[in-house]
Image 1 (tube, helix red, strand yellow):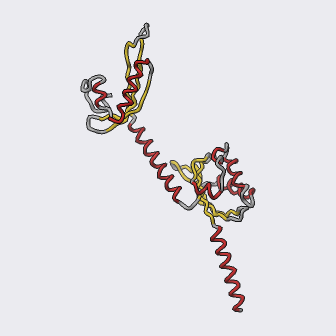
Image 2 (image 1 turned 120 degrees about the vertical axis):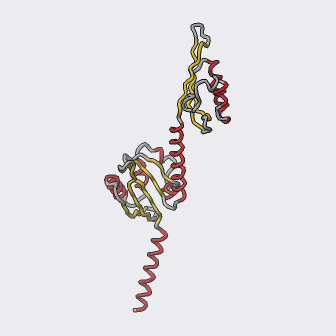
Image 3 (image 1 turned 180 degrees about the horizontal axis):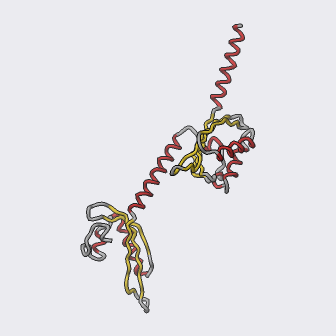
Length: 232
């Protein structure tokens, strides 16, 4: 314990010396841990400690009280483990996910991310809005059930499901198609595989509502044909 914090043997006195180097925001945790000694209970906590060079390190501290034949506390084994690297990795992962979530929620596209086997990773609010998904959609047991709830909204459910199957089977590259819904809306869809360690692990599906643009283009085309007919 003293070694990976940079202290020499004997530099920290038992208990008081250890408490002195605990981060002030974690002192309550240490007091709770020490209180467990009186209950003869094994306990473990994660807390921050100051290394000799001033750095803050994360330590896993485990207390193992041992009782004698009369049930009285005879000795205490305290084990320490440096978990700074693990904490840093978790922090970076959580930060990356938070940034990803912010990006997903700021785009006008509906985005869904799934693993190779169909397991749902995440999706943004716009995706749920475009597909008018129920509050229980995410909890459905399988990828097929989730797809079915989407497919029944399209004009050609079989074509929709077949196209998804093809894309899932050929994850490399970028796939594009246009989907017509029963309610008259039109959506374009992009699908592209994402890689982890040089292997395609899943697919990012991106949907955008084309309805207004499509109607505007149709109206313009009709007007141009009408004006052309008048001029002839």
